[in-house]
Image (cartoon, rainbow, N blue to C red; front, side, top):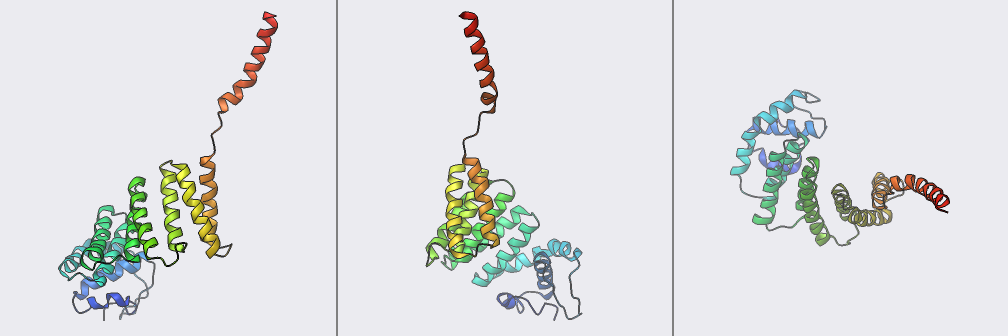
Amino acid sequence: MIFMKSLNAKLNFFIDTVDRDILKKFTIGFYQLSNKEVNYSDNRDTIDKKELVYFLENIISLEDEVVKSTPSEEIAFFLTHIAHMYASSMMIENSLYFYNESIKIRENYLELRSLATAENYQSIGAVYEQIGSFDKALSYYKKSLSIRKELSYVENNLLVAESYSRIALAYYYLEYYNLAFDYIERTVRIREKLLVPEHVLLENSYYNYKIIKKATEPKKDYLTIILNPVRQITGAILNRLVG
């Protein structure tokens, strides 16, 4: 078998429907980007980085197979991973296309509002953030948050906190510092309740909290600070001369 033994179970349905060479191209690209080791029947333990380029050049064949397939959760899952690969390669338009196709399958065909859809919305937001479109990033982070809140049994969970953190940073980059501070405060409160003090997510929250809090503080007018003593001295001299 040319496909790897460790291939995720959700992809196994492709074994009988997708050409073996196409499947190999996908698995090479996916595992290369995720830095995982693979084992083929020829006992190769790792993938040459050049294989990734080969995969990306030939992925159109796999995309055609996916387009012809009946919409299902497995197809949505598969499309999401193709989108991840394009995003990791900074192929922005391709990544956005496949994230949105995955969302369409879940919401339009399967009529699902799932945490996987929320994750896709967040991934789209991250792509827009990468290219500096923070307003678009913010809108997708909020869509993700809405689903996470809707599907959360307890509102204050870590996924909600993650959305708050993303929204806080988007507002920060847009220079809406007070709104950013509101969301980073929510992030810290949730993570303090659910994480141990030394957890990296909590440490990151504290760091962002300090940065955003500083941005909300009134900026000092250093020119006025420098000139005030000069004005006072000048005033005193003028008063003496007049007097």
